[in-house]
Length: 144
Image (cartoon, rainbow, N blue to C red; front, side, top):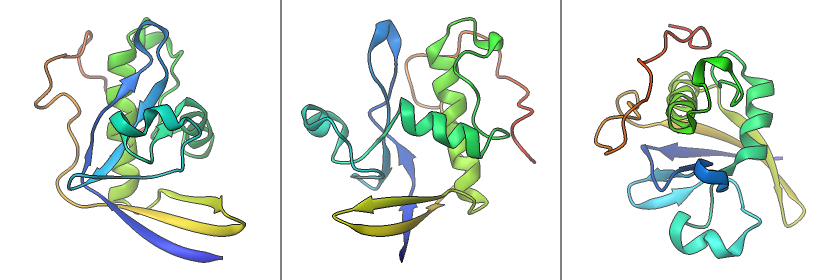
């Protein structure tokens, strides 16, 4: 199995499933997108060649329930923006602690990918037009 370290410094081009749209979380380093191969070629122009979809996030939630919140958690009362921001911040924390390790197969080759965050912890609300609907959550799934 080949091991690779992927450096990430921001999330870009998100869709948290608002109005039934697909959930997409794209990891970037500089201006280049990184992460899992996608199954939807029509998304490559907007989100880059790689991103996380909802199935990936559900699997990560199973692996890391202290970091990734459930989309149907009653706290969110249906606010996909608040949920998506918390998912991003949890993913960042995992990368800061170098715990975000996933296995992926591509062209018959198995890869172990370790994601490493480059920079300060991610504040999902910073610099965005849309703000959280509810106060920032005291997150039991974050380990400080």
